[in-house]
Length: 157
Image (cartoon, rainbow, N blue to C red; front, side, top):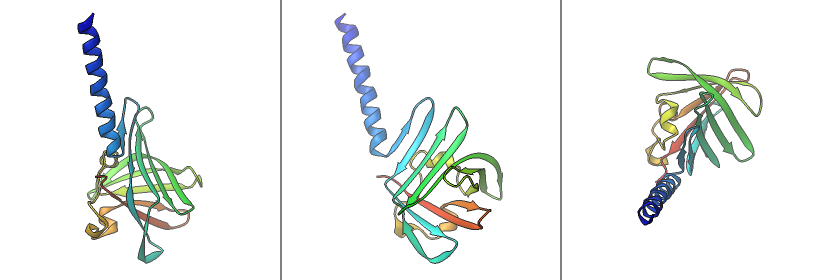
């Protein structure tokens, strides 16, 4: 009996350590969901070429049950909250299509790296290392209004 209690306590301790380690990096994964909440990120807009904005919130998740990626971006009072699915890979870019849940508008996301990497704390090391938002960021294109945003996550440390 003591042996079973000891094994149970050790198992719970290992699980708690893993959960704390995941939360320190802002990322989480279980059987249904894979998710990363970035503490820092920057947004560049195709309409404002001389300025990047500091993001209030950037979250990227993957719903394993529905095979849907979610990209949530908040700047001031503006929110982008997309649900997209992988569509194809071409010329070194990965393309995802879906909707923005706020506006119900169509959105196309393209990025040099798979969105799955961004659910695991992937990005650049600091704002100073961003050389090209278009190449290093996640492009969110809204064809109905013709605006393109580039979100660049900074790796959680």
